[in-house]
Length: 445
Image 1 (tube, rainbow, N blue to C red):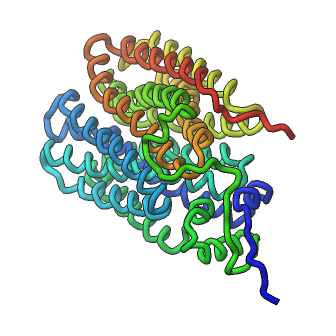
Image 2: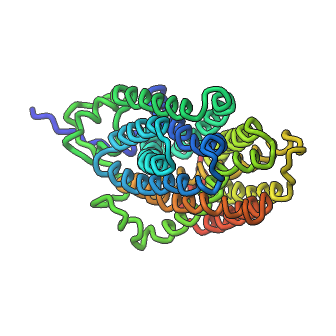
Image 3: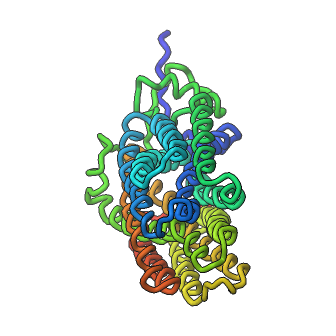
């Protein structure tokens, strides 16, 4: 008797199953890439005060260099999102890490602003391309009910990496200089890329859409505790079918309202986040508080973000994303306004400043991190990396603006204008989140 070929719904298999140790290890690997994305992303921001001294240049001279990196990230997010949906999330993620690892290490050799800007733009292609594919991978290894938390644990590694960069910079910059910092960050990232080539598999949901790769999918399912026949056919009935991954699919009547709201929220949230990342160290150092306090202030902003994002992800899993994300962004408005009322001078006590930066960083970074989980929830598998990548790419435009707006605010109105601008940006984020229709729902059980 001829055996009937089995057809298996990959979506139901994953969503009804558990979140086992092997799946957690895969999420850990994607998170590890984002740790180094966060480290390499913030190396220039923490190094600007030292570069200003070595090259005898004003703070404003580095705004175009910071902008070049953000423009590269904007382009990289859009391109790598489409690559991830068409060729695979794994290929796009590993390629992104290789790009930013090599080009970050190369910054150690530069002797001019032109060379610095060129390398930061090219490194930005990889830095921007890693996050949408890491978010897509993390979301597609786990059951749907764990998706927001898995993505949050992955993307929270951006501020975690930034925290590590700031702490290490506080010790390395005074002794070994900024060149050593860039060389170490880039080389360590290349080591992570080598590990991913051996250990990281492709997304099961992505593989289910490509019949020629079903044997590979069967092997992965066996690894995570779902053994199937090698000739099993796969479908994904839990996801809406879209013929081809493209940005055009994001602005169809079904998705355009949520897409516009997500892009607005991403733009303004990244404006606030990267205003802090790029300019808090030089602002604190310029106020006479020293390089150590400058690095610790940024570290507190990032470390608060790690704690805030994890708590936010847990809360979303219990309550849903709408009340949590709107509450986080509204709280960030008040945190930024409280900072705007502070006076930053050489005589200021560092501890209250660092604590307030930590609280505000928790709220802003938690909003930013959970935006990735929301974007991954809004879009189906066929365009998930494209959807997340496009939202992030649009958000990077806010990051580009931050490199100039932050410098302008500091020069025009000091810390008052600087933090008031951040508060206004987060107010727009809160309104935009209220307009998103496809929020992560509250669990029914």
